[in-house]
Amino acid sequence: MKQTMTMIDNRDGKSYEFEIKEGTRGPSVVDISSFYPQTGMFTYDNGYTSTASCTSEITFIDGNKGELRYRGIPIEELANKHSYLDVCHLLLTSKLPTKEESLAFDLELRHRSFLHEGLINMFNSFPTNAHPMAALSSATASLSAFFYNHLEMKDDYEYQEMARRIVAKMPTIAALAYRHSIGASFIQPDISKSFTENFLYMMRAYPHNRMHIDPEGERVIKPIEIQALDTIFTLHADHEQNASTSTVRGVASTGAHPYVAISAGISALWGRAHGGANESVIKQLEMIGSVDRVDEFIARAKDPNDDFRLMGFGHRVYKNFDPRAKILKSLQDQLKDELNLDSNLMQIANKIEQIALSDEYFIKRKLYPNIDFYSGVILTALKIPTSMFTPIFVIGRTVGWITQWIEYKKSKGAKIARPRQLYVGK
Ligand code: ACO
Image 1 (cartoon, rainbow, N blue to C red):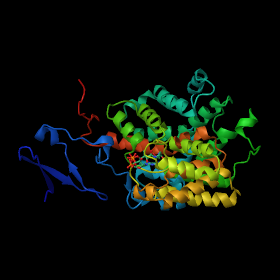
Image 2 (spheres, rainbow, N blue to C red):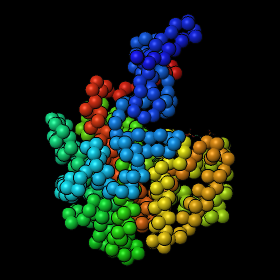
Image 3 (tube, rainbow, N blue to C red):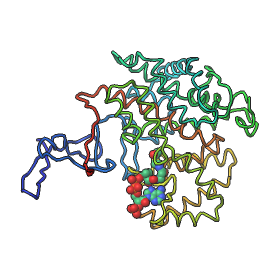
Image 4 (cartoon, rainbow, N blue to C red):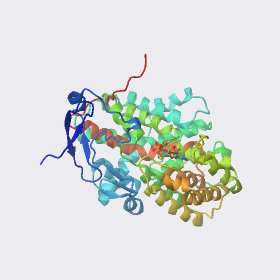
C-alpha cells in the first residue's frame, strides 16, 4: 500500500498528501515534487540539510553510525583488500573485477593516461607559480575540446570509454600542473608503472630542479608510499551527493560535455569547507607551530565571537567518527612505525585530536576529525607538497564524479537542476 504523509496548513486548515518513498538503506523520503502544484508554495532548505536531490545506487553513508559503502561493500573491506583500480572498476561497472578483468582494466588505463601535446602546450600560458588546482580545473575543461565526441554517446561502451579516459588522464594532468607550478618540464607517463606509482613518478622524476622535486634526494618510490596513496585514492573515490558531486550532476542536467562537468566539480572541491580542507589543515598546524599553543587555538575554535575553525573537524553528514578517518588514523600509525616518523606537525595534530575528542564543545556538536585531518598529515609524511593535497583528492574522486554523471544521464525522467528561492529583495 502507498505510504503517505499529510501536511496541514494551519492558516486555513487545508491538508495535502505526499508519498513516502523507501530506499534500500537509510531514511525514507517524502516526495514533495507535487508540493508547489498542490500548495502554491515552495519548500525552503538552507544548504540542503534535509533534501535528497536524486535516487542513486552508487554510494551509501550512514552518518550516525559512521558507515560508508560503495555499491553495497563497506569501505573498510575495500580499503583493506582491494586496489584503487579495482574500486574504480566496482564504481563504474557495479562489480569488483575478476583477476583477468583487473589486469585488462589496469592495462587500458595505462594506455589512456597520455596527454595530447596541444593540452600540454596550453600550460605555457599559465603563470609559473599557478596553483595546481587552477591549472587542473582549466585543463580538464579543455579536454572537452580534444574529445568533443563525448557530447553525444550512443551506448555503454562509449560511456565507459569516456569515463576510463578521464580517470586515466587525471593523474597525468595533476602531475603536469604540479611540475608547471615549480617550473619543471613535463614528462609523459611510464606505461610500465601502475596507476598510483606512475603518479608519484610523474611528480618526482628527473629532478631538473632537484631542490623542489626531491628535497631529500630520494628517488626510489617505496612500496609503502604507493600503498598509502592507493588507500587514500580509494577513500576519496566517492561520497554520494556532496557539494562537488551535486555540482557535477547540476552541470550534467544542462546537457553540457562530461569533462566540463568534472571541471566544475574540481572547482567546487577546491574550497576549504570541502576538499581544500586538507591543504588548510597543514597550513593551520604550521600556524599553530608547537604543541604548547594548541590550547590557545582550541579556545579560539570554541569562541562564538571568533570565526576561527579547526580545519579537518566536523562534517555535514558524519555525526560520528568518519570511517575514512578511522582507516587513515591506523595508516598514519603504520607509517609512523615504517617510515620512522615523529614530526612536530604529527605531535600537534595528535594533541588537537586528543583534546577535541574529549572536549564538551566538540562532543556536544558531534565534531569528529574528518578524512582531511589525517590525509593532510599522511601526505606530508609522504613528502607530497601541500599544493598537491587537493589535486590528490581530485584524482581519487574523478571516478565517483563520472560514475554519478553517467547515473544521472541514464536516469529516467531526469530534469534540469533548478532550485527556487524566497525572494526578499526590492
Ligand atoms: N571547528 C569549530 N567549530 C565548528 C567546526 C570546526 N571545524 N565545524 C563546525 N563547528 C561548529 C559551528 O560553529 C556550529 O556551532 P554552533 O552550533 O554553536 O553555531 C556547529 O559546529 C555546527 O556547524 P555548521 O557549520 O552548522 O555545520 P555544517 O554541517 O554546516 O558544516 C563543515 C560542516 C563545513 C564541514 C564544518 O564542520 C567545517 O567548516 N569544518 C572545517 C572545514 C573542514 O574540515 N572541511 C572538510 C569537510 S570533509 C570534506 O569535504 C571532504
